[in-house]
Length: 131
Length: 79
Image (tube, each protein chain N blue to C red):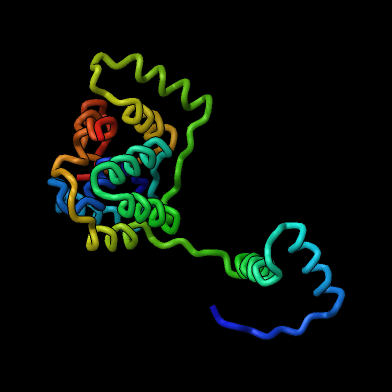
């Protein structure tokens, strides 16, 4: 199975007080031996939120863990960005983030089976989330 | 760090000193970096399973922060 990690999943894992912490740890077990992916945009979000609201040490720990894990980091490029912009512009809601749109495009490009996220936007768009 | 005594050929020693000076680092640092580089070639860093890394991170999760940190994107912009 190929699993794409969204920012909220990481934050829920690293933040003990987060209301989704227990659920995230439960779902993590379902990733098993999956190939895991995340994006540079997600890393940006997670690092910023952890640093702003928990601690710099938490953000640094997240980056360190990412570097030593098998998770594949997907970087943006001109072609990908063009399709993310198209997806973003096609959204009717103003509450869908650019990072969400990036994940939607990457989900298809990388033949992802499940996205690890609590965001309802993905199921609304027909993506399969880890559950 | 451990102190290690190593015997070098004079010309090797001279080359190391010259290069270290050029790089503005100590001879010791130059030799340490060269040793690390060689070790990384011989023993590439093996990545750990994502689930194992994150399971450990979750067990030692950080205290503090709001309960809705994962779901509220306002925190990205409002310090």
